Length: 478
Image (cartoon, one colour):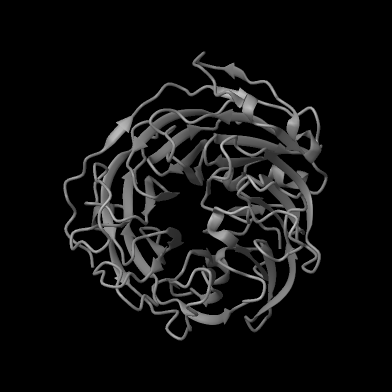
């Protein structure tokens, strides 16, 4: 399915250190959402974003300490911020228009050091060594950064993985692209058996009847092999049919084959996949030949299986349900604590998934707030299972699932609804990295949050050199 790589056109926009705004709420309660915090610019003296429309609430033990607002051209009506990855003193933030590199050496004063214009939804991002990878799940006219939207039934449409060289964080360079079946909604880095090779597990929905790029039945994932020293020669090396025995129910909310998101835990030889109507557990001891261990369904409580997170011991998986696809107000007073929530599954010694408790944020949201479980990561606390998670306009929540049957919220931060009615907004991804929580707000840019709580404080001594939340590594908490 891979076609010759066209000559790449890359638009790199170097920008001055973006203004950092700070904001604090006068009250820790949900009722404080009528408060109007002030914004103070620091650093370059450029105009800061006006946070006055944001009514900010947080628990006493958590608050936002910095915000880098979107800069042109990433401040348009559909220039939505997406996923995050980290390396050293840098955070990489995807956007439907490309990606931004932030210097977070001083988390209280983060600054954008480069923006790369390269349109293509969703532009979910990951990094490894000197390479950065973007997921493109939108038919484009070609694989370059100058491409335009294309007809999915066109013989020439392209979607898949784009690869950049980030050796110089202020000047990322386009390297190559790999076309993958049905594009790439998300991807996951899987280390190879030697340091010179890594693999990308590419997850995408499908099929599209009549499409050559997304043919039926699409029961597979795509595996891209990347030689680290020759990334331009990256290619699809396998398309394992891990879902060939799955039965698609056309009455499902999202009746799609393929997977939405895959999380790997190489040290445990395991991967967990959220595959729209089902959750899966896989053996990935051979990264090119993943083997399905179990497929689970929960038609009563789950709508769209969206993402998965292992605990550090590799004995649990938290699956999230993206009820409404992220565009609905599903955190209202419905009385449905399992809908649009997280489900905690324990993994038996025989590698069977057993469902235990559910977690959903306890605050009732308005009808103008899109809210549902989305992307999160572990907070590395030895001896406990604690996670931070984005909930779109439901904000950022920290919860403890050490007791699998009774997960409990520890801390939270959230803004009020945008003034223009129900629309896409809020936190897309929220991850813990070296003492702070970083949240990619879809319309407001990069937030830096600090949580100060006896349960999470031990994590502050844990240091990482790189973080891709869907590629888990043990921090020694087991």
